[in-house]
Length: 164
DNA sequence: GCCAACGTTGGC
DNA sequence: GCCAACGTTGGC
Image (cartoon, rainbow, N blue to C red; front, top):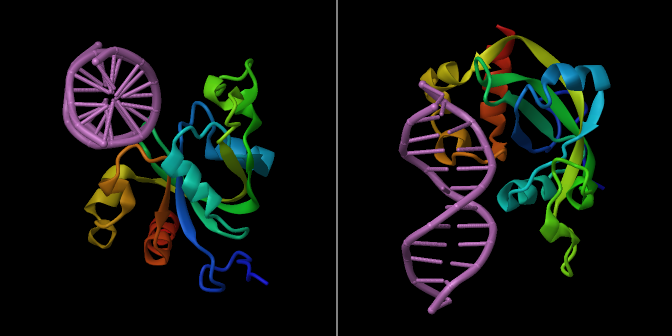
């Protein structure tokens, strides 16, 4: 039986992730109000594959992209394993993908996340870049990847920065 | 608004 | 399978 994280960073064997969202589309404040939400609209295979690797209890850094300023704004927890993203086959959705209605079916998946915390202040991209212990982050090595792994150490460091 | 990075598409 | 054209992401 898989172990699950229960809010403690130190406990368990969960994985750590960073997920980007444009705050004018879906922000940490939106998630806080909703408590829980599907992470829909991902249309990139690498990002999808990362979601398919997630387990319940995995910890997520919520990142605001295309924001002023951009940066990590809080944390969330994976609360449902990857399942079909039906916005891909819904012609009225802004995330509709014609290919997903084709003979090979809908390849797109999403997880659900639940709100954990909103930082008192944004840990900005500029701040992240200046922090030496974060130089190896996937964020700086692979541009445009909207769902990406972070190490436990990176996660912990950024949470500490957000709470300081 | 510009543009670098980079994923996808489609001709061949 | 190659690769040029094109579209999107996302920082600035």
